Image: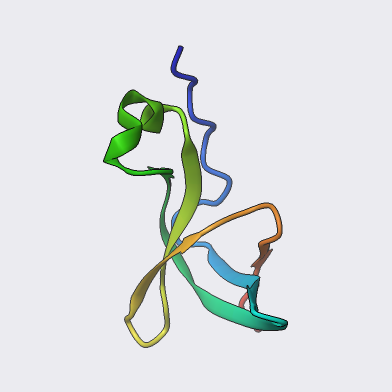
Length: 89
């Protein structure tokens, strides 16, 4: 049975900061990206060799538009920190 995907957590137009820790060898890098949410979705995990299994193995992603106009898609995992950024008043 294919499960139903949960509703989006963030509205389009919300400003987010996404922080991830990436382990490279014995070092840990911190990546940060900030931008406006364009879309929140899921992508299949695995390749074509998985066949129908890709229908239920999904990874959450957020598509962000940065201030310089660049569009980036961030794959989220359990250790990703997502912060809502409020505009300075």
